[in-house]
Image 1: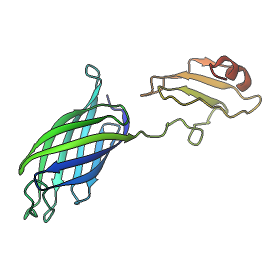
Image 2: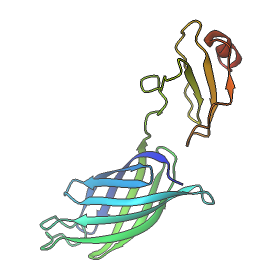
Image 3: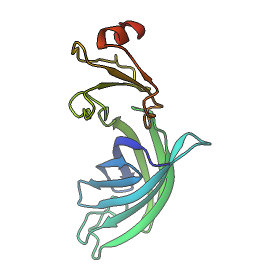
Image 4: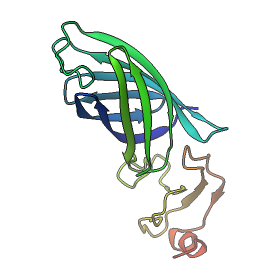
Length: 182
């Protein structure tokens, strides 16, 4: 299942140094890069059994990039692939030992940011003259702009993707009274 996940910092260490990079996981696609110019491409799926993200990553190392494994510049660029899993929780670190073509490497992955809520008021679709309340798994209060006389569609979703509207409230102020915390 493809999900919108967010941003991960990657700190890796070899025998002769260390490096930093950033990965973005969005709708099954992984893209990233590090400070040496190495490009990371791949894919991921959410594993329902383990509740983790199964990653397939291809690292494209350019010529003349410094190797933290050998301590020398690479004379030729090359690519290598790795498979591993990552947790979905923010600020959780996981360390993977990766066997690169040049030797062993320790990589620490940490989710540092999620994508903003897709259904924020800034990008809320308004084709029907109604406003939408989306229930997500995030711990932030739900807000509805008050427009007297407009209907409010109540939606229930899992956080991965909202379900279609299931209930329509009478007016914005009536719908707000039915929500906990309003």
